[in-house]
Length: 403
Image (cartoon, rainbow, N blue to C red; front, side):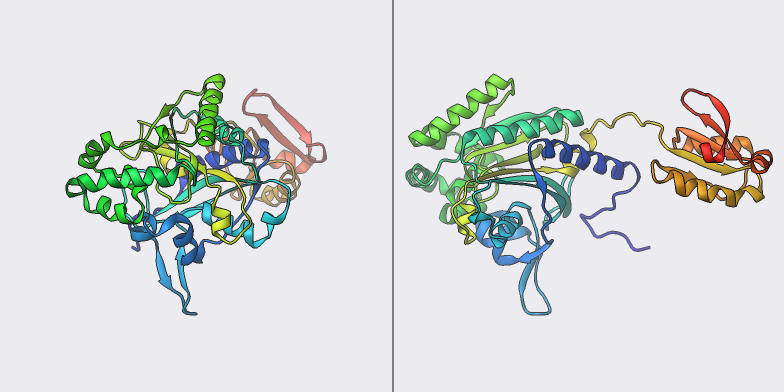
């Protein structure tokens, strides 16, 4: 027997139903907020992620499925969704249009890391990206949309927020942070020491407990924001409080990607173990420009679908559709035109083998059909069908053309 590769799994039975329910619910909410579907390739040039996610990130440095294809191109399987959507946005010259653009997407992402609960090497995300709106009101709206998705899925969460500043307040903060980190570098882990040279902000994201304790006294960007960033962050917190959305300010929240600025946020759950983040995102006003587009403000998020699978409250299964069966062998072929006609309006389960009444009733129950429709010897002779509503228990016999 050939097994799936480590860190990759099949979605079948109950899990596939949960997956469809999550995606369908998220799409329904996104459409209400004016988002449209976008599909980007799974395979992209490696340069796309090096320029956007950042070479100092763990994703680019350690986790990408990167290889040279038969044409000698340096390519990789997409490790996240935002960079591909931004590339598509620029490629289609949408950055040159005055209309604000909003896209949603879902699909597989790939990262070569240690598989664990809620974290696979092939995993799926649902995400949204909003282009052309620089107002903090859009940040608030994005957070509200995620809250609504989780509410409709019956998932509880804690919201953590931070501000990563802008090109005005970030440089002096980095200088102060590097000074602080240099003084304790001998006590920090190897990854943190590497990041001091490449991207010191990422040190704050270290999950090493020793490093976290050492970073408790690190300078906080939230207290070193410029006037504009400070005003936007205060506005965001005021909007959240007015909307009744609880939050905590996490001064070490920097996300794992280099392209974020200003608002950064994560939705976390204590019900999934150590990998507590179930959604995250923020503002990335410079990324379109980094990928050769016109300067365009943008903000977005992604939800880890596998992360929330076990948290979803599935709706009660409703009886739907029709179960069609024959009581005699001669009646089997009479079922096909009925099935063809009814499949234009509802789900139809067609049983090919002639069976007894009890067997058909059990079959209808197994597929959760709303109606059991049978043709026996008398029905075949009279051009009728026997119909039972499995919810109301009402039974009737009607002409085929009236059914």
